[in-house]
Each structure stands twice: as structure tokens, then as C-alpha cells.
Length: 129
Image (cartoon, rainbow, N blue to C red; front, side):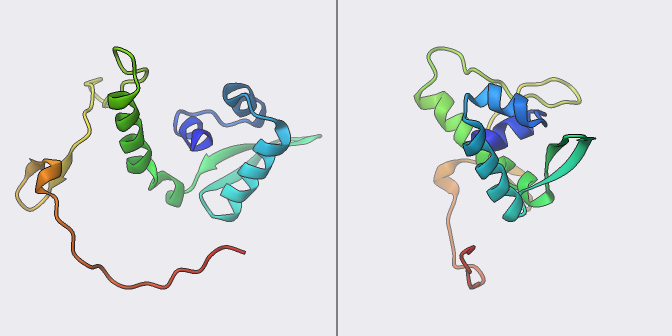
């Protein structure tokens, strides 16, 4: 999750990810490989000798954004001392964003107690090898 967080923040290179996360090279390499195999990130070389890559989120990876934001807001509510460590803003107008769900039909925000569930389409799930 922390690797994805950094990629969402624009960190692209292995060494910067390693420094930001305080993680061993072999563990970071393994995690990046797994994210790549899962189709969540792709890598692009930026240097040939030695070969070094930058890492980017795929569409599949970008779709994880709401989940990461929800976890961030949860941590801010239950574990942040005082103000949250990171404030998400609208990049166009710099307004702070709050977590909410919006009903496109009613065109209103929906509170957690107004959310219901129903069965969706059944899909088979195949675990990665």
C-alpha cells in the first residue's frame, strides 16, 4: 500500500521509493515485481547502462485510488494526532476535499448510514500463481 501511495504522489524511481519507505532493496524489488505482474504498475526504462526504470500506475492501479483515500481518511480519523498529516485538495482550485459518496441519480451526497448493498454479477476469481 505504501508503494502505491508514493506512486500516487509522483515518486517514480526505485531509489527514491526505497528512501521514502525505508525498505530493503530486495523487498522493494519483489513488491514492485508483484505489482507489475498483477498489472497494477508498469515500468519504463529511463537509463540504459545500467538499466533503470521508472514506475507508473496502470489504469488498474489508478482505480485503487478511492480505496487508498478511504484508508487515509480512516487513519486520519482514528490515529492522527491533531491535524491530518496529508490533506487532499482539488488540483484545479486547491480546495480541501472530504471523503464522501455521491449518488449520481439523486445528485446528493450519501452518508454511510444511507448505503445498502445487493448482490452483483457473479464472477469467478482465479488466484495469481
